[in-house]
Length: 326
Ligand code: MLT
Image (tube, rainbow, N blue to C red; front, side, top):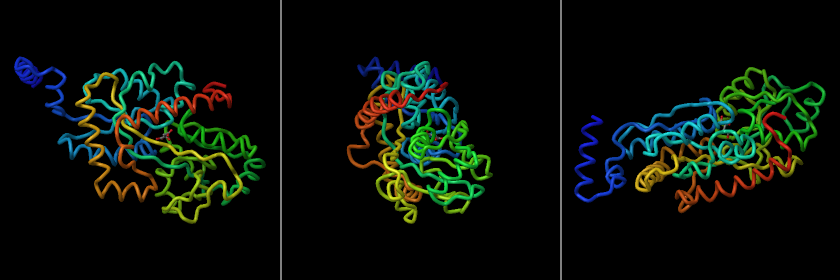
């Protein structure tokens, strides 16, 4: 098969087409892997599975989700950065891995800007603060009191994940110092929240709406400027007296630097068509995630957002003295 492909490429190249253009025409001729750098069941995984299915329909090839978890997504991201630049290995990059890691994981082995081509933004979502049903709290005031007196544990998706930084920010504002329990992703952290091993989590609303609907966790506040349409009864943090903790988290697809532009265009087109599908829109609505529209779906828009966030979060992380091994 490989030999037949090589012969076909050589034939077309001899007709005057560049190798890159020929490869792009044939793309994709086999399944594509979309690496999720966190455990299953978390927001990155949930968003990746929605778009992978839809991209596969447009591209005529399966897009396989592969969870490569560890070190707040940097292990999976480094793996994709080192992969062939042919469009067959992609990264579902969350804001945390792509924007926090230069400041938190300087030895990660990849540079989010120099080593990746942005392909397209898929969704953004605010952070929701939720408590375990086993923690007898329903408000921020109760959480603050109980965390001080009962020695609460705060779960997160790993040191340097969004759930880690979002709750660090909140804990500082509330003046509480809980035990910080790091997992390989929000999925396992939420499992332990439901069973009561940890008392509260600040995670993207995407991974929590089904738990809130199922009554397995208690929603406390949404860390955003407005309430979430899917959770209209949950107050914003500012409404309950906590300012300056809002965080909107994005998830976008990235390819290794040097992937041909025509291949990036095909992949971006598959994302855009996937986002336009009513099934995706319904799913994102039910998850309380926001899908981009218009030019915000172009690769350049994702690149611009990444560059701005690397700078913004790098500054905030240094100013707050946040370190992976304090
Ligand atoms: C996940 O489990 O997907 C993480 O929470 C992603 C993140 O840090 O944003």
